[in-house]
Image (cartoon, rainbow, N blue to C red; front, side, top):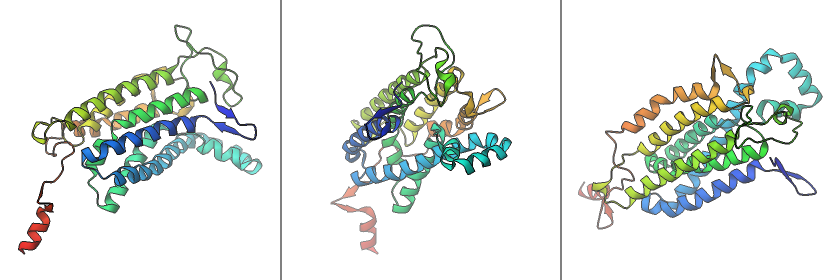
Length: 292
């Protein structure tokens, strides 16, 4: 556990830099693949910026929603905390991030970019999909360093014992299952499978391509919904909220089953990375306009 780097004049939280390393690597690779996928390099970059803004908003908002029942139940105490030290009150309400909120926020940010600049959304979705688990894997390594999203009490092989943490003292009281690192590893495996499938289809002719638009995203969602639902039983941070015996993330996983299935089927969509044909560098639309 290494929650921050002491720079002498300031302490730098380590989660953010680790996450950004993964994001920067992903963007570099995406830009290299963009042309082959029929996506402008500028769109591949700027759409990520829109997506990242949505990611932060969505992740923070869903975190706040998970904290809302506690704030409502102890509203007077929360108001007193806000009056005494508003920074601690704000940190309590918005100090964390929830992955599913970030995923939904990223999707909405991407959609906003595509609608505003009239860019086909599926090309970007298919291009970005393999890198979602890639960046997420780095994020989970950051979680391990920060001591958040920790596992259940565990004394078997590969157990971890975190040093004392004033913010989460119960974290260091017992050995824990390294669920963050397990999820990081499973995300990297998912990335390897998705990028292999994508590059194989890229190297085929359009007629021989197997994947339809959105199917990569469907494969990713199906994989992650199963993985996340099972890993939730190994999580020890119950503070994230539950409804009955299901955690917030498990409930969202159930709600995302239908979109995942619809993306997997994708029968009526074009093949992945479909690029409109051009005739003598003049598009069919331009030829039609000339004929009129």
